[in-house]
Image 1 (tube, rainbow over the protein chains, first blue to last red):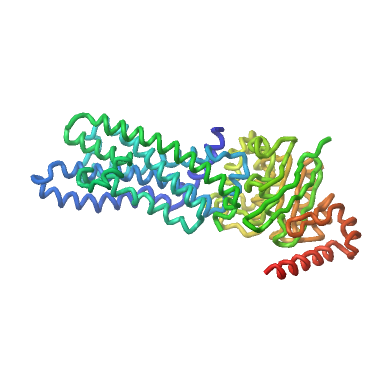
Image 2 (image 1 turned 135 degrees about the horizontal axis):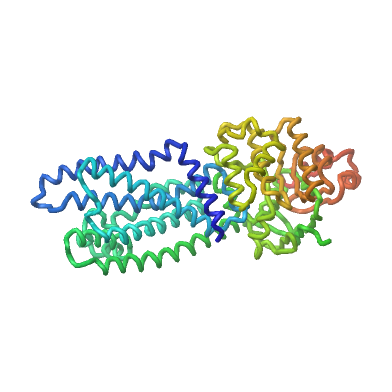
Length: 263
Length: 249
């Protein structure tokens, strides 16, 4: 891997973000709107504080962490879509750029996006609802890292599907992550799921992160098991997804789809 | 000296359709090879295979004596292309796009190179303009600028002057010949402008239905087909291909 090729792609996206209002809205406006809507729901639910202890911490914390996963996935997929929209894929892949370098650049963009969105949400939650996400403590760091990787996995899967099936699959860039939301147990514990869905949730690294976060907030035992499952599953899926991306890339080159993907 | 590009039995099939059918050719260093043929003859597919964007069904491509499948990175570092059919990121200015390309290829002296290419292609008046606001002629110049910015040893040009006005097109051809004279640049050139092909190409390959049907200088090809000029040869072959496609339906 050559660093200059990765930074070239990052520079290209940063130039774009610098002057594109819709892209800035993606970082500032939509997460803010999410927070406002869910914030008011949470404020309403606090009236039943007796029945639902720690409701603010659960909901707002879960919302911020869900956004980490969502923006991490978007960072990968939207970066790929930007190249399709700009009809720039040919320029990139007719250069010495390797698919692995392309993926590395999109992953870096994903981290940039997550960082920017998280800053916005953390500050807004503190200002508007006096909610400090850092009450989760040091556990927050490994959980967030796991969510970023889980977002990459869904992002690489979505990107591969768009590359393979073209523009008609573009809608997956916004919808795919929500397929995983019910089994990510973001706002409810895994226990409430029916047996077969619980099995699926166990195979989902994000579900272990959210379970672990609830464990920390309930001051239960340190969620080492959840963290181990999340990390193990993430590493396994990440390797599988990167291999799948390379396979799809080769299939697209074989079938001439790479040069037609934006048409 | 061995040829800088060696193509052997290159074939590309998409399902039942054969886009390129076992073609072989060489390009010598510093040579401008014209690739001619009607739409659907396989010119663009051939260029895309040479750029590693499409995997051939059979055959081999060697550049600088290296196999493209095993030495993609080393080869593409020294190769570039320009086409009327590509674009560049719209929300970046001309200069920003060139900076990104420079970084992608790991170039040194970026400022000097950009200044140089902007001057050569007379792009000073729009170097700070957003790419989405460029006219089609300016866009063509930008894609050409990104191609020569990297100072490649081989340049693939797919109708590079198609949307340029005659004055800029003439200057561009002059510039390409100038670069060739100064650096020994090798070019593979496609165009539907027969006069341009005659003017630019040292040698021409005529493709029809994915096969090479003629190879030689423009004069040799005209003589072989018994026509008055290259345009007549083109029309004859294009109409034959049209008839063949009609029968196939």
